[in-house]
Length: 269
Image (cartoon, helix red, strand yellow):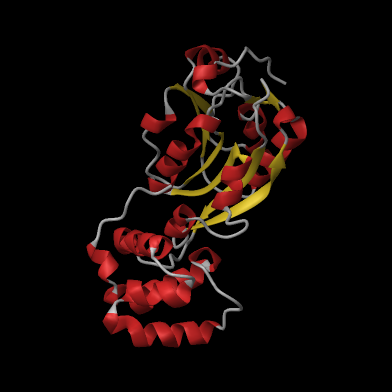
């Protein structure tokens, strides 16, 4: 196992030191394909075991001390980059992303990843609540619904704060993201779809029965009633209760009728 310097608070450095968790991550990455891009390699707790997969690795580390030391310990197939992932230009060929994301930069990094092209799979350690929200545990958030047509989010499990050095104040969650080989919505329609999802989540009314007619507009009323009848929801369904397939169906059915597409969405959470 690598040795660990004290983590720098301003960089959100909480190094993964739990061997069973490391083994799980390596196993998950082994089921993916292509070169590996690691976010926040630190002292190499993940980098060095990942080398057993025999795939090219690019390890990105914002702390020059750790980058310098790790560069002397890796195989020739591993490249250590001293830099900020948020400014790093990802490869333009298929690759896998893996990383222990700094908790206070998680949202920014997730957005960076989701907006990037070419990667096919990601295995990420993030704050537990973030992992639950992205995986739609208890219902989808607006951000998850806005990305569902192009990605599948999975929750692998909870990782105790004791698995890190220094110990963070909250537990982590191990999550996976897979890019859909066949998108549920055409990528060219992402902006319109995002606006549509925003309109449903912020629409006034009690449940989809009241929200959908407002979003669809007067001309979309008949198709809304037909779609709702086909779903046979139990009780009062909310936007968070919709599945990825239902979101894409709704967009296809009433998106073109929706006055909401003429309004720019507010900032996602």
